[in-house]
Image 1 (cartoon, rainbow, N blue to C red):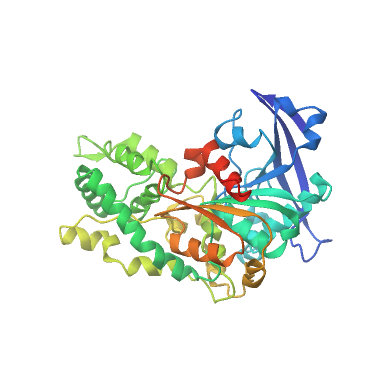
Image 2: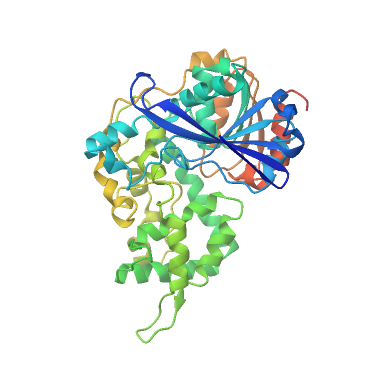
Length: 435
């Protein structure tokens, strides 16, 4: 362990060895990293009496957020908790998974078998081993953002004895929807977000058409070596699901072109910003396992988002331009072409294909156990969340005994980041029946 200070906080870095496959506890082990955070005023013996809160980040594929001091919701949490910011397996500093490390596993088939152990079920079993080590067996509070909420729902299904309470922000999953059903439910929301964006910024319609026409005429290479295809450009629509995303997209588009001796070309600065938004170099697990988080033994996911995209002519750039329409941006989805356009993913294409074809994923949720739940649970459900379907979330909320919801249109999917202490404070109070 390493302990050090930031303004207002004392941090301790932990490394926990855990089995790769929890069904084989004596087999291969990997390492999970967690950062313990306490307020400076609790840094001595006083911290031993604090209850634990473990934070599960959204994703999949993202390590826990790196804070500097008591920022955002963390400042509220350390007032009463000892916080563990957990890098879920394969992310951040937890035996990272990427194009550099996966070849150590062997063939694409061996890589795919390895990655099958990186879903919510394995993450929760990691949490249980870590909890027993840190708390001496006492239950703890789980705060799950987005995919972290999916993990928390699995936790309630499989190990509720480890939970004091659960707080979920934008992350109540459907208990049974297939990947196809998830993306079909998402499509109307994505279309609405596009319509709202072009209503707010009508000048962006012409800019979007011009950029896509340019990309259809010539190949454009990003600074990191990736290819900016029309489909890759349209995937910037993922921004539209966050509170400031529509404004970020607008500011990005307004600097697209510069004059050159060969005519207008996409500006280097624009391409640099595009690279930062589109590259999966920092979170390749997001792409490789994105559809697998919805798989529960209902057959292969088989690139569900690509099939659903083809059902909506609004996303067909060539056809839309030919008809004088503005092509729409897509949302939170991963497609086969991501594994050809992005150098961080290209070496993993065969592995991703094998995962997309896998049919024997285990169920993630236990509706009967959730119906008998006794753990206090509160969840923020965002009224028109682009990433997690509101109807699916509310259906799940009704299926979990005692779960209390805060349904709001004050925030988009990133409400925990945008609302910080106020969001966490409200949900903790709701879980304690203090409102």
